[in-house]
Image 1 (tube, helix red, strand yellow):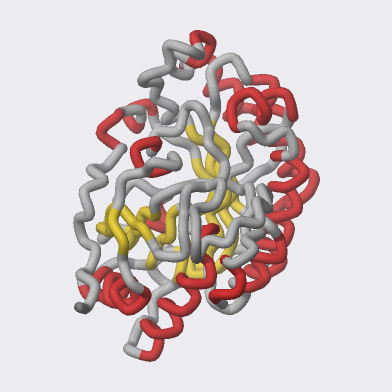
Image 2: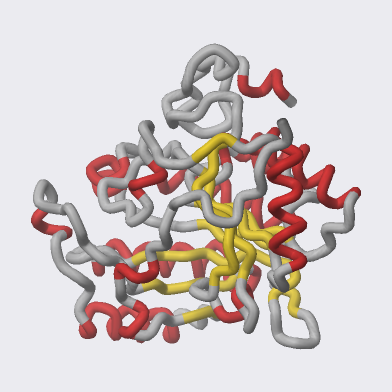
Length: 302
């Protein structure tokens, strides 16, 4: 697995960095960096349940959205601390012991080889709850195939339909075609959603779309595309939680979604026959951004 980071092509940027010697375009080297592990109650209801999703926030990201609410940990010079593979496995087990309904891996594409080794260790020590792969949607199919058999629930974004917006706000004009291929692979691996007796998701793919100010037309195209491609094979989460901060250089994004914009999108969602989740207005708050201070990460053995 370590060979995969020596000429890194784990993400669609395919920068080819030898991450054993330097950092890749995403900012990551060959050592895992993470910023927080905790029970998270703000995911979709069948993922958070009553006790929370055992969320591990990894540092760095290959996409680089200008509006990222987790920019403190997603940039090249990201917050976080190093954690070994055994310590990551122990973190998973600790979250399970705390009552987590699942282990939720947030933005872990650049650490997939290490994550697989940590999951292997943790399963050998009793990890038995579902594993969620929480993703920007900007993923390589080849990397996702490495995860087959390890991931139970995929939670990808489908951010943009327009290559113009994808390039302007995420520096990735190829976002849509890349995300569609990735989500197709995710749905292939998980199949249609499956629930346990308590209504918690045990297996499946939930496609998230975060509405952005002024992009209602793009949202409509995303929803239509999801309906046409995936139908009932995936759930959809239509999110209105976009919260602008530090957006002075992007004045068109320096406001929240209006009730009218969101209501119109919900109406289309229903008309298309999509299944999934809406988000209440009270969900819009910067309080949903956790403290990225290393909380909950198990210490590496010395």
